[in-house]
Each structure stands twice: as C-alpha cells, then as structure tokens.
Image 1 (cartoon, rainbow, N blue to C red):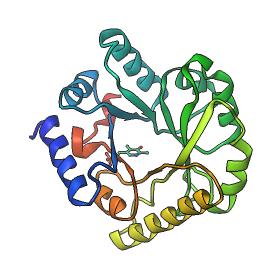
Image 2 (image 1 turned 30 degrees about the horizontal axis):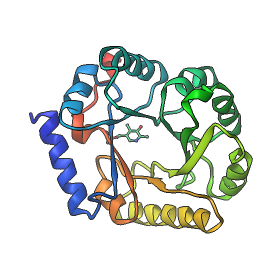
Image 3 (image 1 turned 90 degrees about the vertical axis):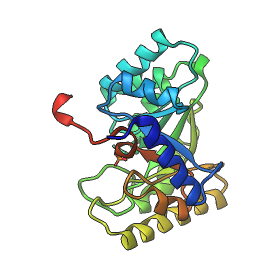
Amino acid sequence: MSSISENLNRVRDKIAKAGGDGRVKLLAVSKTFSVDAIKEAVDAGQLCFGENYAQEACAKVDWFASHYPSLPIEWHFIGALQSNKTRSVAERFDWIESLSRVKIAQRLNDQRPPEKGPVNVLVEVNIDDEESKSGVSVSDLKDFLRSISSLPLLRIRGLMCVPKAQANDEEKKATFAQMRKLYQSCIDEGYPFDTLSMGMSADYELAIREGSNLVRVGSAIFGARDYSKK
Ligand SMILES: *Cc1c(COP(=O)(O)O)cnc(C)c1O
C-alpha cells in the first residue's frame, strides 16, 4: 500500500500533466479519514481539505484548531447541508461548495460570524438533471444566483458539480464542457466568478482538460473509504 505522501505526489504529477500546474487547486477530500491521516497529508504540504458530514467535519476542524492553531488549513464543506447544521459550518468553514437552497444561503449569511468575513461559496449544479441528486437545475441557476447575490456574508465564487456516477468518459467530458459553458455565461453576465469545481479521483484529469480549476480528490489520496467505521 502506498503512503499518503506518495499518493499526493502522484496526483500532483497527474494534475501537472493534464495542464493544471499552478492553475488548479487540489482539495484533499478527507471524509471518513482520521485526523492522523489529515496530518500526514499536511506534513506532505497539503493545506486544503474537503469534508461532507457536518458533525464529523466540525470535530476535525476543532481538533486542528486546538492542536495546530497556527496551521493555515483551508476547510471546504462539500456535503449536503441541513438547516440545523448551518451554524456550526458557517462558524468554521472557509468555503461551502454545495450550496443549492435559498433558505440555507440565508441561514449561512445570518450565522456567519462577521469578524471572519464572508464565507466563500460555490453553487452546486445538478448538471445531469438527476432526480435523486441535490443541486440547482440548469434552468433555475440564474434565478438562484440573483436571489442569493445580495447576501453580504456570502462571497459567491463559482460553480460545482458531481456528474452522474455511471457516466462513461465521453459522457463526463460532455457534462464538464457544459459546466464550463454555464460558468462562462455567468461571468459574461457580470458575476465575478473565479472557481469551477469539478473532477474527483476517477475523472480529475478529464475535468482539468475541460476547464476545471478545483479538483476534489479523496480515495486517490487516502485510499478506499470504510463507511462502516463512521
Ligand atoms: C467524496 C466526494 C469526493 C471525493 O471522491 P473520490 O472519488 O474519493 O475522489 C469529491 N466530491 C464530493 C462532493 C464528494 O462527496
């Protein structure tokens, strides 16, 4: 089994080979993995981490804040967010990549401690129009953006998507290209976007070639996840 630092180097190499060197941010998705695993990645130079489950995520952020208060870790929340968890996330996270409901946006804005400044936000787009999936539909996106754009403690930085799990490379390529267009059309309308989050362990190189500048990579760095231990 290879170590987390070897895995990180391999992923960084592949990002560079896909043309993402210096342009693409690597988010290490650490859900279900321990603070020790995260620390190993930190020691290998990784400072951006993504988490999905509010309770688990907040415990990890707090652990690092008390054990390594001077480490400049950037925490991204990338999971489904229920209204009863918005406060704990608004208080701790630097980025929320999975925003798709106006009510949640309002709560995050109201609960963000003003002294921390606005929280960075990406709007999750249900790009393949899957019934079971969260995210704003393509047809609702512009209305959604208008309804959250005046909230002072949210800084909307761009879009995020998770394509259909069973899609093949060709389908994913089309999906990523469609996201890229949608992202560009928002910029053309005046939204000051700079972040397009797409690509996971199985498809981050493809996503980079289609214009992603933030990839969310979990298992290729930390290994297979064991949900039974959660
Ligand atoms: C778990 C997760 C990832 C990482 O998935 P891997 O396939 O392990 O790289 C990325 N994005 C989101 C939204 C996730 O939930």
